[in-house]
Image (cartoon, rainbow, N blue to C red; front, side, top):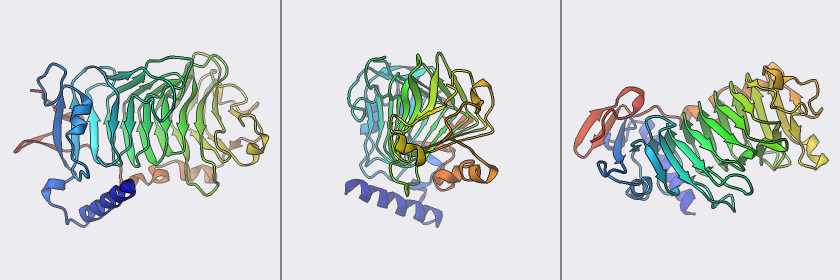
Length: 339
């Protein structure tokens, strides 16, 4: 009930914003800046401390800027704290790391449970390795976006659990079902890299009811690997995954897709491909129940409209509030200073 209540408040806030009824304090071009620096020169020394400082029921943009470094901590963004952004300067210099395996809902290095979350220029990794489920990133909050992030583990790397999500220019690495869950997500210009040694799958999408508007679309992506991998296997009976305009190396197995040992799923899943290229895009030996999509069939999957993105994907803030001061953002929408 609390989660539904918070989502209702957020929806009302957006409606008010669109009508111009919100004050400058909730102007989405301005974010309250919180600085994380392990050396003690920022506002906080850990990312979780910065998140904990955000009030429940938050209705303002909060921008948590993390100075380069390796942050060994397990981070949770609670469901009642929407509108948080976490950003580094470069994806390979600001690292959030943890090592844990077990239940996929409990092992994540970073768990996003709140709506309207944004991450930029971060490495999010679970270093447990092979031999167990070890999630790097769990996204269970609605309307979350990730830009130029590196998401690394081995099994179940990205638990793309529920809600609508957008991933842009991200690098996602794993071996077994390493993009999995029930969400509706668009992966645009991402690099998907498999560590599979022959029996792994990139996706395990869990749509299990035909009426659910969920699924994964990979648009203009690059698919590579160190060994053979499937594009996806059917976790749910109505699993839905589409690849379009994407480059695929020979790491992609000729069959492409798996029904996960249940032939009944062959008539209900939706596995589509459209104008992909590279040696792994050859469909001559694909399973016959996957689809070579037509122009009309692919159309709904080729824009952010498939995730309702026009209504919630927001630009970077133009200004930051630090105490009583308001300062202009630097290039790329991030702060250009750290004191």
